[in-house]
Amino acid sequence: MAGISLLVAGITNWSLTNRQLVSDVVRAALAALPGHSILLAISGLVLITASYLLHLAKRRRSFDPEAPLKVMPWWSVVLASAFVITATWLTINWLLAVAALPANSSPIEQAKLRIDAIKAGLSVGAGTGGAVALALAMRRQWLHERTQAHQERVAVATQHDATERRITESYTKAVDNLGHEKASVRLGALYALERLAQSDEAHRQTIVNVICAYLRMPHALSSREPEQEGESASDAQALKLSAELGERDVRITAQRILSNHLRPSRPDGYWPSIRIDLQHATLVKFDFQGCAVASANFGGAIFIDTARFSGSSFDERCSFRECEFRGYVKFENVQFNADARFERVKFTRGATFIGTRFSGGTKFDSASFGATCYFGDVIFGGACYFSEAEFEGEARFGQAEFHREASFGGCKFHGETRFGSVRFYLASNFSSATFNGDARFGSVRFAGKAKFLDAVFYKDCRFGESIFLDSARFDRATFHQLAAFGGAAFHSTLSIITANFHEEPRFADARVSRKVHGGRLPQGWCISDTEDRHGLRLLVPCQAMDETSQEDDASLDREIAQEVVPPTKDQISRVEHADSVD
Image (cartoon, rainbow, N blue to C red):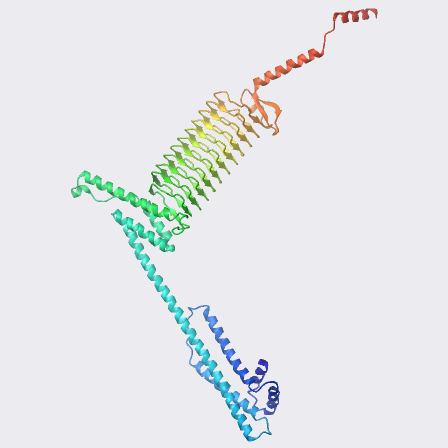
């Protein structure tokens, strides 16, 4: 039907000049179609075309709602009117031509057909006009929707501006109050900042930076001069003490605000992915237990009283360089997912790192431990450096694991040192280390090279049941008291000939591999000939081997003496008589 409709519409313009030919074509069309199908097809085609054009225009505009609106030109109305009039006129003329085809019809019938043709043509004109009106209505609706969307965007922008203005005013006022001389006003400012950060996620990092900046500032005491105001010395001291206590409360509150919102255990108040910068801050009773942050920088900070970091986690690099812990510090079960820096840190009252995991590199170079420190069950996933560190109290590393290189070169251990059951998966270096207390390395597994070059042991040193899978070097090491290697196993080379033993070393049940040359052993110790299932040989005192050798020689002489029996006198006389007869 649509194809035939297009065909008819195409020949309408020249139908008046070629009526006979048109009559033949129209007769064929009328034979194939009902009476008003052509009119309906033309009207439908016009409506579909107009709707499709409007749809394309609206879809193009929808991609950019902020595009400038083009005003409808005046000639578009004239063009639409001309289109309606032309469509009506063409339709009426064509239908009148069709109505004049039956020549044998009566005048009344032809008049009736002309009237019907005119009505149908006017109907087509009305339909075309309705299509144009529909297009205009659609444009009006689209303009209304565009206006409404613009108003909504303006309302949202206005509300956002008002919110930002309110936040800015509150933020500015709170920051100004942080510098107030009264502690109560500073406390109110901190709580105002906390409310802002809780309600507005976009400003949390900024507010955290402000709180950290306040903690980095030195103690702000009262600037009043009591003597100039006629106050007594006691009043001046009381005023100073009150200011210090007030500032202490403000700092503890600031610390509490940070830690409370950095704990994932509080899902309603947790601030994720926060970075804190507390370099050179003075922190009082710092409680960071269970907190999780993206990164933290505590370089040069001073921690007064006990500091707690147990259960916390640091996703990125964490720095405690040159910090001073004046109280006890707890780093139990802490997760360092990147590098951790503790160079030149002062642990005045001791520290515990039990169960902590260092996934990245760890540096404790030149750190000072004023009391007992605990590194039991710690896993060092990256390279670990304790070079030039000093341990005033006991140093306990029991069951720790070093998965990369471990360096304790130049360390000073003033108290007892315990490395029992430690695992060194790569090279370990204790060169030039000084052990003023007992050093216990029992059941340690050295999978990489172990170096104790120039190490000094002033008290007992025990390596019982330790396993050295790679080379073990004790060159120029000094052992002032007992050096016990009982049960130790050296699977590779052992260099200990230049070590200085003030007492006789003990190698009871110690075993060495074939790679160990006897000339590199301490004087008085030798390698036995028997091997165990691992290809290791026992170390025994050379004197015991000599005695064993002498006993073996005497036993062999006895066996030979038993086998060679001297002849009797009777046998000798018989032999002599036989010789005389010959």
